[in-house]
Image (cartoon, rainbow, N blue to C red; front, top):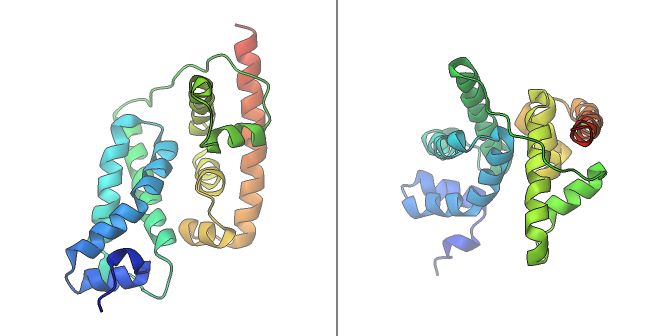
Length: 203
C-alpha cells in the first residue's frame, strides 16, 4: 500500500518530486514553511523583503532539485539557499536605500538567556503578549544591527536550534569556526543589548 506523503522522510519526498509528483514538493513546502519564514523574518528584519525571499528560496529548491543528494539532510541545504537569498536581498536593498531602523522602546535589564526564553515561550498568557512583542521587537532591532556573519549564526543557533554540524553545512565553515563565531556573537549581542538599554534609560 502506498504510504501517505506525511509519512515520507525528506529524501523520499525529494525523490518523489524528481519523479514528477508535485504533491511531494507541496508537502516539503508545508513541512518547512513556518521554520523558514521565521528564519527569514529574523534574518532580514524587513517585512518588504521577507515574502519575496521566501518564495525565491522554495523556487530555487525546486529548480535545483536534481542536484540534491537524498542521502543528505534537506534542512541545511534549504537554509543555505535561504541564507544566500537573504544576503542578496539585503545587499540589493542597501544599494537602493537605507534599511529602516525602528526605535528601541522601553527595556528591562534582561539577560541574553532570559530574552531568548521569552521569545521561545509559546504558552504565555494573553496579558503577556504585548510585553513579549515589545521584547521581540527590541531583540530583532539589536540582532539586525549586528555584523552579518554574527547575526546569521545567532539566528541559526538560538532561533532555529541548528546543531553545530547543520550550521557548519549551512555556512560552509568548519565546526571549530562555528563554535568560536557563535561565542563571539553571543558576547556581541550581550554588549549591544546592554548599550541599547542604557541609551533608552537616559532618554
